[in-house]
Length: 238
Image (cartoon, rainbow, N blue to C red; front, side):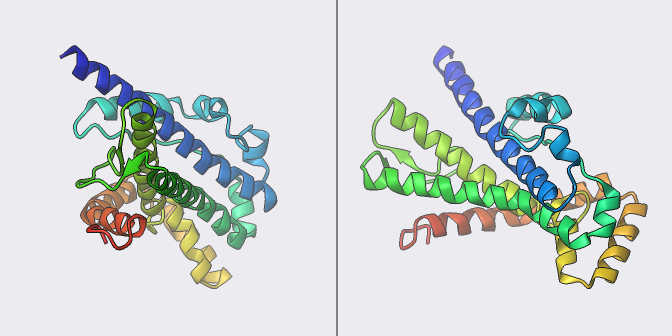
C-alpha cells in the first residue's frame, strides 16, 4: 500500500508540473499575441511570462485547487484552467487580431505536443524508450530501464496527451473556449462582430463549456488514437 501511495504521489507531482507548464504556455501565448496586436492588458498584468506565479495569483482556484481535486478523483486526470485578461473594446475594434490571440493558446499546446513527440522519438532512437503495447494518459511510451528514463517517459507521455487534449478541446467553437473567437477568422469582419456581440449577450459561458465537454468526450478516443498514429507511423497504432 505504501508503494502504491508513493507512486500515486510521484505521478501526481509529474502531472502537476506538466499541467502547470502547459497552462502557463497557453495563457502566456494569449498574452504575448494580444500585446503584439495592441492590447497590453495581460502584459501589464505580468502574464507575458513562463513564470507560473502571476498566473497562479490570478486564478488560484483553477491552477491549484481544481487540479489537485481532479487528480484525487477517478479517473485521476489533472484538469484545471488559468486566464489572461484582455480589453473587450480592443477585440471589438480588431476582431481579426483578437482571433489570432485566441488561436495562440492552442498553438502553444500543439507546439508542446510536437516537442514532446520529438523527445519521445529521440528517446526511442537512443534506446531509452520503446513503443508501448498499450497506451493511456500517463503511458504513451515505455521506458526500457527504471529511474530517470521512467520519469522522463511518464512526463513526456502526460505532456503529449495533455496538450493534445488542451489544444483540440479549446478549438471547439463554443464560448468561452478559444475556438469561439478563432472561428471568426472564417467570417467577414462585420459578421464576426455581430457573432461576438450575439454570443456575449446570450450568457452561454457555463452551458457552452458543458456542451463542449459532452461533445469532446465522444470524440476524444478518436483524437487520442489519431495522435498515436502520428507519433508512431507504421506501427500497430497507425
